[in-house]
Length: 259
Image (cartoon, rainbow, N blue to C red; front, side, top):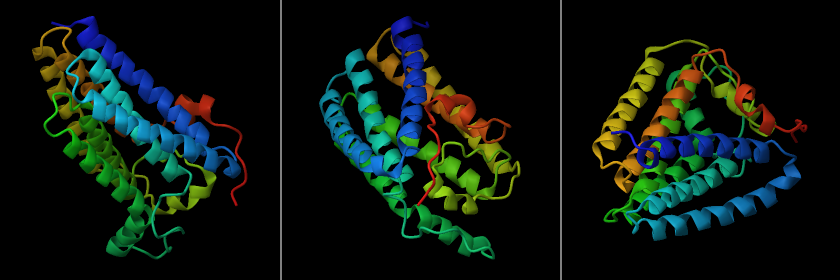
C-alpha cells in the first residue's frame, strides 16, 4: 500500500534535493575563480557536518533518521563535486587528450585526468559503508554508494560516446575534459546502463512497497528508489537532445574567462 510518509514524500524530497543541490554546485563552480577558496571552505565544513550527521543518524531507525542520513550523504557528495568542478581534486593529468590517442592509451589518459577524484569518492564510499556496517539505518552510506555507481556509469558512457554531449554545467577551466568525450553515438552500453538503473529502481520500489506503510524502512527504500530513477533519467538525458541549461540555467551565472 502506497503511503504519503513512507513513499510519496520521500520521493518528492529526493527529487527536490537533487534538483537544488545540483543547481547550487553548478552555480558555485561557474563563478569567478577567486571565489573558489571560499566555496571550498564552506563545502568542506558542510562535508564534515554531513559525516557527523550520518554517524549520528545511522543509529536512528526512524523517519527523521532516514532523512537526516540522506542529507548527510548529499553534503559529503556535494563537497566532492565542488572540489572536482573547481579543479582542485581532478587527476595528475590536467591537459587535453593527445589528438592521436586511441584505445588503451586514450583510456589511460582519461583515467589520469580524473584519478584523484575517483579515488576520493571510492574511499569516502568505503568509509561510510564500513562506518554503518552494523547500524540499523544505512541509508546515507547506501545513497552515497549508489550516487558513485551511477556517476561512474555516466562517465564511462560519455567516454565511449553518447548522442547528447551537453556541457553547460562544465566550467570553462575544465574545458579540456571535453577532449576525452567519445564521438556522438548511441551504443548498446547506454541502453544497458539505463536498463540497469531502471531494474535497480524497480527492485527498490518492491522493497518500499513491501515495507510497512509509513515506516522508516519504506521511506529509506523510497529515497533510494528515487535516486536510482533519477540515475536512469540522467542517463536518458545523454541520449536526448536536451541541454543542461534547460534544467539548471537559473543556476548558471555569467561565464568568466578561464585563466
